[in-house]
Length: 341
Image (cartoon, rainbow, N blue to C red; front, top):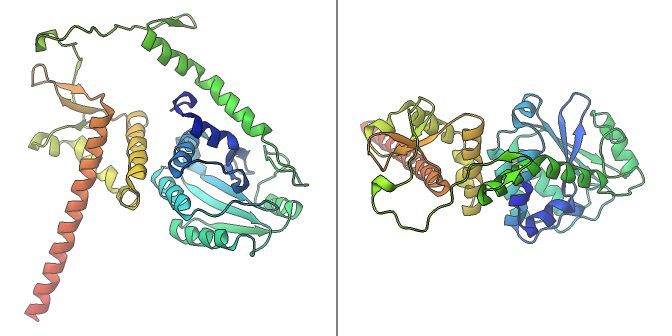
């Protein structure tokens, strides 16, 4: 996912600066700032897409998981917008689904009376997510000095709020510009691949699709056959696919995210499925395979995102049915034991 994939509404939400990369604390953990006073979004879906992009790019996930992530919600001396409980729970659900270890959550407020609804929602979220949360009460200078006791030196980091309460987006805008420069080769490559041109001296192979209809399977574009490994997920309903080691690993992997999946609505589920699919392909080296439509015997890699999503959805539905059967069996056993007594 690159900035070029985001529409205007998501970019506007991103540039507003609600989430910002602050830097590293004294023990090397990534610090992410959340500033409710900068929250701008046209819909909850827009906010979810923006936060998904940021969590994907704030830090290398594998490296950050070792030490964990520190989140700082800074509302001291700020006028926060009305609390949107739906948005908060959507964000909690999405964050729990990501392979990110949040080791600490700091909240800076003027006082316990400040935005009492927000305060209560945060307390509930704390209990739900089991993350150690520390509240800091006071004005800018008091809060920022106290944060230093927890290894967050706001003077040394790219913190957007001064001790006097002056707010700047300078560091956040610089981070966005850095992302654009880093993503430029990827964006150019994708554009050049579509147009069959060259970018930065690199030639991209591109064969334009013919508008002439295919007469037979023999004239279909050749897709390279692959040999399935124990890490791959096979499409199909037969014994071979269901008992393939990769499919068994796939079901066990989704079991870990079942609770997060069932708590979300349709858009949450789509975000989660796309993220898990991306992680499996890039971090775990998983391929999704189907029987070749040409010879009906070899295996080829599935490139259709909708087909891969359907595989995830179907597996989650199967897990739900399996859990229901398990509960019913337990209830029947309990009833039989009660009758036997």
